[in-house]
Image (cartoon, rainbow, N blue to C red; front, side, top):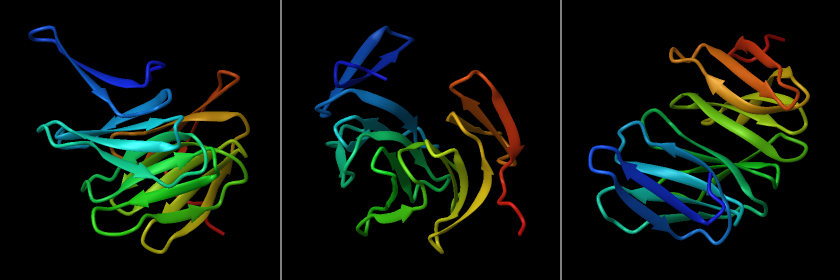
Length: 178
């Protein structure tokens, strides 16, 4: 993250620095697209930005009513998900207006895709939710108060949830069976 409103990319091989400007407040998170051809930043200015490494202008993802706390990119790069302090998740594609997912009571702190059409979200309400992005529906995985960080295993089958108290919870990356 950055408190100077920029994204900086350093090239290790030649010590070159590229500074990407466009946000008007602190940058919270960054994530690369799986191809490495572009990255997405989340910021406290209520936006996310797509930064293309081929020199094209950045694309602003504007629509949240609170700071964008996290971003995720689907494995097929067709969907960018943004999580916000406005309690909403937005799913962005090239062709359509964003889809809004609502299920948290309070800010959404972390999101991760587990496959091209399934997303995990973690909110300040302690809810760990599994989202079917096509059906726009969610199921509760667990309630983990104090959760802030989320990581999905390389095989996309397990979750690690880091809490503000220093505890790390491990659980399957699937919805609870009811």
